Length: 160
Image (tube, rainbow, N blue to C red; front, side, top):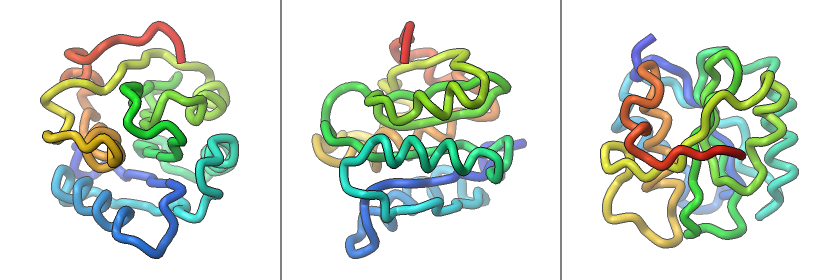
């Protein structure tokens, strides 16, 4: 599976009345023009990390096994803690390191690897202090199918 054909499942608390979801789509489509972006939900309760975590877990049985899951609910946006994790079986989860990805990682059989997304080969510069979704998290789905080749230059995390 090439990175341009891997499904991207996208969820956030951005809502539907602004341009944020569309801008994130544009970034992902520029990186993977043939990729299919599935909007899981953008109507999550604002800043409710647990609601987002439960949505991910509830959707896992219905999402393609090769899909990259990008989920963004971040009460502390701008903090340097955006991560990509590889769950057991190779599933990629991307989001802020605020607990959002933990339940999905556990449901998938555990976290095999986690990195903080800092690689200049992935991150779009300049990074906005308030839109890490656009500049860091959405571009990170592009690391597959050669997982970690570009993120390995980022900081490895020992726990999520």
